[in-house]
Image 1 (cartoon, rainbow, N blue to C red):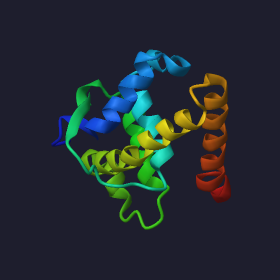
Image 2: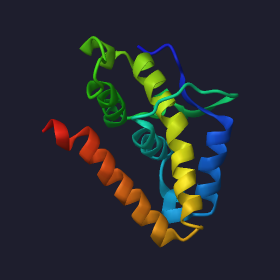
Image 3: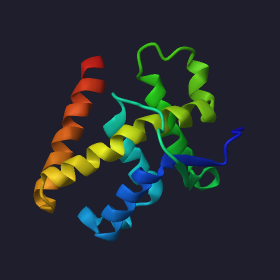
Image 4: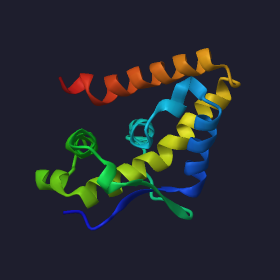
Length: 143
């Protein structure tokens, strides 16, 4: 059982999320928060960092599905030096790691949007290219 009751992000990252959703960039407004959080986790998987500034509750644990929890746990499975596989069953440890990944992932998404100068088609291609790169780095090489 988890001791935490929610997933946290920094206030600045919550603002990034809110701006992209409010502007309906790539229909991100139709995403559930957990889906957007997991996208940020994917983009920050190779560069996790602790939340530096004021943090804000982003997602309540009771709203997470089994599938979401499994996806979050899988982030630790692929990390070298992840330690004991039982850590993947510890939702608090998994969440701490995912929060650190999202902390660097949200700004990466924002940077791509800025680099695309607000052009959604360019932004979409940049996102897909980066996801392909992450797949090659983190999955394909281990197959």
